[in-house]
Image 1 (tube, rainbow, N blue to C red):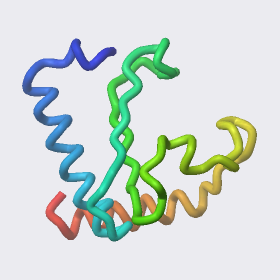
Image 2: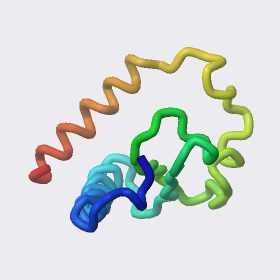
Image 3: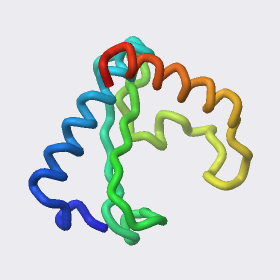
Length: 103
């Protein structure tokens, strides 16, 4: 699915969700600045056809560079196993913050 296939209501709700999620992430990561990315279609790097938004918290001193430039030493996707325990802990903390903020 591509962004252009969403109804006006779906687009509105998507962007409302982006703003709500930014509020939760802002609280956790102590920043109001984000890089927002969308892969819209397989040629753009989207592997599974669905609409989603990437919200990347940015911090003072990260240089505001492209996402790949921010982590030049990061392994390429699929070459290492993610830290699922740490990711689960972060997801739980963010869910709690969302619930506290009425989300």
